[in-house]
Amino acid sequence: MKLSIRVLGIIIFVVVSLLVLLPTVFVSYRSNTKATQQQLYARVLNGAVEVFKEYVKSEYGKLSLQDGVLVDASQKPVKDRFEVVDKISTQMDIVATIFQKQGNDFLRVSTSIRKDDGSRAVGTFLGTDSAAYKPVMQKQRYIGKAKILGKDYVTAYDPVLDEQGNVIGILFVGVPTKVVDDMVASSQKIFVRNVIITAVIVFALALILGVLFVDNVLGKPMKRLTIMMNKIKDGDLIFQINEKALSRDFAQMFETVKAMKKGLAELVSRINDESQKVTESGQSLASVSQQLSATSEELSSQMEEVNKSAQNASASIEQVTSGIEEVAASAQNV
Image (tube, rainbow, N blue to C red):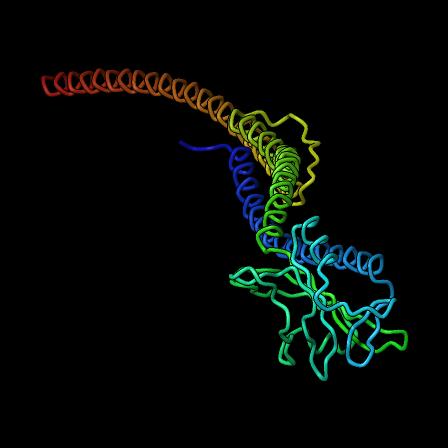
């Protein structure tokens, strides 16, 4: 089945739109997934750290390091005090730890993390090979992933500074990766829904614009060209061509058809002129033929008269000859 140029144009436009739109949506989805995940990790962890800092400030006041021991504002050691880490862990469904600076490393002195036997995971060091060690020593907050007692967490390590700006400890929070991933999944559902709605709207608008484009730039000019060519085919060479087209190619085609129609009209006019001349020449030849025929008949009549005269003359000669012969005979008898 042959399709019209309008249908073909729309199909091509739709295919091209889909080829452009689908990869764009896919790339946007992947980019947004990664960006959303990172943003949520940072937002959740930064929020948790700020809440943890407020809890510490409210419960302990300004922390300081006295004789290698992390103490609160009343000079009471923070070690083995779990009210703050348990409170924030319960309220925010996270794990929390307070490290104190000890030598070149950091010792866990308070934590809500429990081992398999139920005891708290205190008394261990962060380790100078930890990814968080260098940023913390540079007084920067570190955010990254970690496995704690076999479970995946996204974690934040925030340096604790004394009044002189020295690093004396670390506030640590860990959010289960599944919690953040669930938040990312929920956000992605909303994003996908919005992307689909946006894509449908963009596609619909593109389709409408495509139809208008195909109709005005391709369909209508082609239809007008077909009508003009059919008129020329039927011998109509007197119609006017004042067509204008948005496309330069169709404008040139209209001019070509206009020139072709003009050339055909001139050719037909010349043929008519030559035909008239041939007709006039035929009529002239017919008149000459008639004149020749009349002349021929006249000559034929004259020839008959000459023949009759010749026959009469021959008869007269015969009579004279006969008379002479008779006179000669009479003479001989005398």
